[in-house]
Length: 627
Image (tube, rainbow, N blue to C red):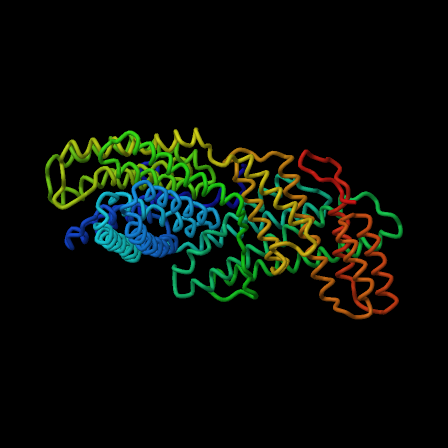
């Protein structure tokens, strides 16, 4: 990517050992928060101080709001998990195989909920599974210990959350809203450039437009962190959400302008309709761009936006159900394997299996996540062994623990801050597994047998999950794409608008953008197929055109144009470009006879006729023009 003059003149960040100062500050905050959490846990003599350290590792995020929002969901999910652990252990502790089946159902249910949510809410659903695994599964042979274990783990997690909050506040962790505002502003520039290109007759490819929708919708999970950032965080969150929704609407209007510009020379009787439609689209684009700028100003100033749009998430119940079923069956198969082998003390391994399955359910590709876990587990075991037997080597002083942890925690914190998602995820898992293997306690245990068994189970759990995923493969990216495109087609064919019928057109468009974001991430970082992009954007354009037509017709009410409007609705139901254009001409004549304003509805109909025109390059996914 060429560097423009502005970026070339920008000051380069201060680097130390190849990492910017912000990365060093982030890693230092992780280390200090972990020490604080461990010190308080040791002082209070909690049974599971490791949970406090793990909480810090999991909540380690570069900005204040991100960490606190995740902390809130972690506390909520922990409370739900503790309650579920007590209920499951109380009702099924003496039922043998039925208990494992119920645990498998719980794992599948949590994976299903993670598929229905996004961001930290999906993480909270996965954490409900993890909490039950770490409490009920580890105490599967001692159900009476479930309650005290749950209370102790909840207390340790609370200490970890407070430690992160205190360190971030004292060391002035940066706010996230300036970063978010810069990202949205960069997206706005791309959308403006698309509209300017459409004005010049340049039509961007479907893959480019789909990529832009993906980048806009991908910001949605991050705006929730603004709520916990400051007292005006709620207003900033509403402003950011409104900016994203209007960005999708502006991009859609740019696509409409490009479609009108790409049409062949219209017939003389339709030339006036096309000119009217172009003028209307240009006006709408200008209005939406002004609203985006207004929302950005509100985001920076911490004030309420002009209108608080909702940014609905698209949820595929079919995909979530299949993912949940596979997760539950995978856990049950591994539990059956341990029952058949008769190995003793396998509770830790089974608990780690549930942890990996739960965290993998929040990833677009669970198998890729498992591969990262397989790579992380031996590295973590090696680091844990080095710390335990070479660095600490029998000492129990807290000062030495702090000094010994510094290189590992700060070093991995630096890697976590890298923009490379693969290396960042690997480093975070290595940090979590290292703490699980090291298991800091007061006094510290140096039993080599315990360490070897723990290391074996950590490696075995990741291997077993991968083996089961070979036997029962997770939902493939291609199948996800087929299901999502099928759902988009079915919604388009529903005359009432489907599940999005109660949403405003702008909000429904964002929901469709969220579905396109899921289509593009279904196969990981690989480039999207042009045929898939064409079909996804065709469904998006047609659905948006229908919604705009319906909204404009609703604004006309039941006046003298009611009969003409009914004919227009019937043409829209047929979803035929020629019929829609003819209906627009008839509506124009009826409006002229009755001297009633209908220019916006007519312009929207012309746009819809272009959206439903026969495709010039049909694809394998296309349904073609509807009769």
